[in-house]
Length: 244
Image (cartoon, rainbow, N blue to C red):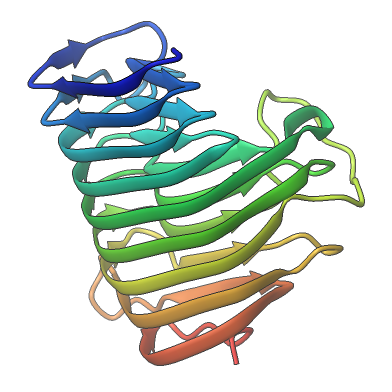
């Protein structure tokens, strides 16, 4: 916490009971060439968690856990994530944001050249109802999925902890999100989920050069959209009709 100009490299982390690496309230941090290992069934064992930080990068790293390989919390600005191998785990997640009606601001996140193997999610944005703030200027490019359950997800109705969450009118605003060069396979029929707030739309969503097929030859894939707006640049498979 509260570090500047720090490099964490060449280390192996195994079977932490909670998050393995946390970057908090820091700047100019480089996480490079580390390995994180935890059982697939171990809860809350995020590989790398970052929040309240800016000008950071996580590169050339292998992560397999029971939770997010990388989780990006509130007030994170200018983060580069590149050449990550993720699996098992819950993928790379922006969020969760906006819990307990909090204000969250995340922007300028670049995720590139990452591979996901057998994860429950691929690249995900997750926010709670009732929050405020924004998640914007997000780029996911050159991403590869192998047997991933939910490859692309925006979920603005995230609700964790086994209790019912009430409908709330406010939400974190999601905008200017680009997915480019995303390929691979999924184990489910719905490959792309854009479940945005009914009250505050996701805007500026761009998808280009997307090809996600089912692991079973001939099985169809599709997308699911709620209040998401943007455009497609061919080819995009499966089609995302709300982006036009």
